Length: 180
Image (tube, rainbow, N blue to C red; front, side):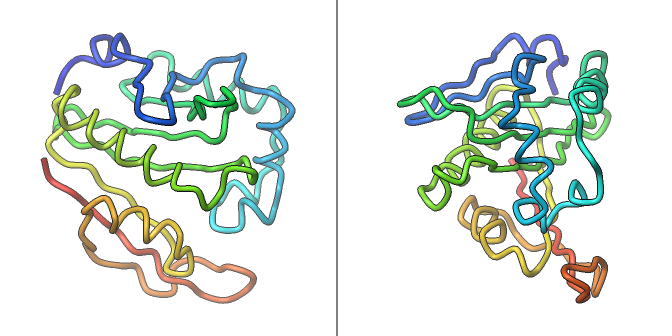
């Protein structure tokens, strides 16, 4: 796996219809705070249990500064709108990366941007960063996320039964992986 400075120097990552940028303080906008504080949008995320402020977002962003992890903005190139974020928690000693995605802009949902961003990041981590394995988890009731992971060729790798509550009902956490 390449060094984090080498990996970060390769941004932005451009794909047809989107660009992936390293998240910056300028990305902490009222719209971004609105996504994070939208309980319905965050219903599959533990973000729903937090109250997000400019300061809490700046504090979170700061955790990426001196780490080997990536915090990424997803930009739709036609309008240059920020439509979501991604994370890659990298474990260089194992050459693995735990990835996640949040799509916040409802105007862009259901149009394939999530899959495109996911596959773009996976390809980047494999082909440019030298990662040998990516992995992720999602709730069994989050059908859109399951579709994104399976569409990208990820394979189910077990589950935690009745692990988290969604609207008061137990839901499994399903883990997926893909090896380079």
